[in-house]
Image 1 (cartoon, one colour):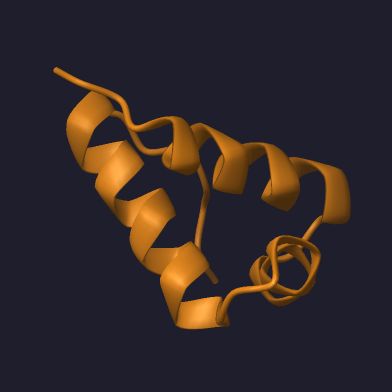
Image 2 (image 1 turned 90 degrees about the vertical axis):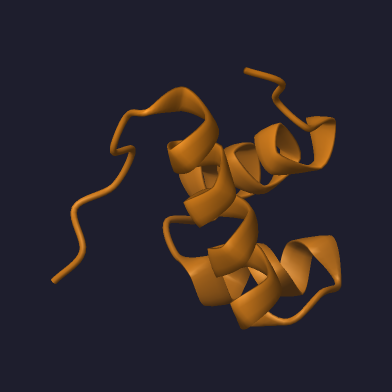
Length: 53
């Protein structure tokens, strides 16, 4: 298991802002990029970080 620092940065941004879209704005990337980073982090950790509604 190797966690990418960018994945942790995306996770932190989502936690701070409360949404994927706001995190994307904060990181100056697209929302799908943040979603992918979070998905990959969850996969690397084998742990679900967020409940999706």
